[in-house]
Length: 242
Ligand SMILES: [Zn+2]
Image 1 (cartoon, rainbow, N blue to C red):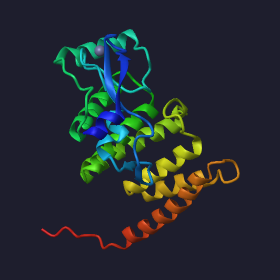
Image 2: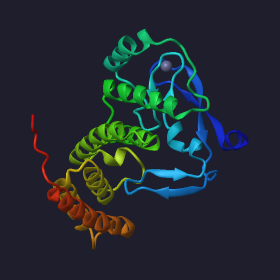
Image 3: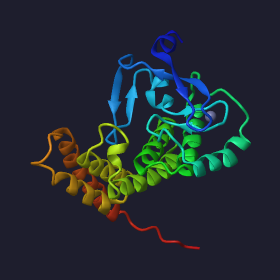
Image 4: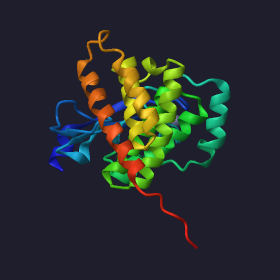
């Protein structure tokens, strides 16, 4: 508990929907020790209960509008009306800005995803929410729910790539990085042909990018996807015998 008290601080926020002032916990940068990072950038810390992704979503206690720092700062009048009718009218005021368990973080992400869909946030913002929700399920070894949200995340990242809105989401997202990430998510949902296409696309940046770490990962995961594809083809098809 002492670790949580020193690593967390309260960030003051203003709700983009009802303008209420409230605070939400954030993790102080540099206070955690990283253990490992998966090929899709899911990061594990020695203090997993303080993984910053648990604290990415802000939930307004007054109106129930949930958002991240990447959401548009203003809502259009039509969007405000939708939020009022479909979220706030059904909301019982409650405080979700304190210390969060995994289930509480899952609940916060689901609220933010609903709010992002209603208010038409850019694909990259929605993709990031779906991907992190999948990671929360990975942390609890819930493979079915992880896969369900990875599938939606990869669809949103593809849309983000097509519409070139990925530069409006996470700061460090570049063209080669999003191509690599789509490839890796496709591999994880066993869409191997698409995975290989996206990795090959990323590798075309060989002489054009300084992100050599990503190129190496694309090379490795491309090889892995080809192996997994071969293995999958070898497996005998299970006949349905009734
Ligand atoms: Zn609000």
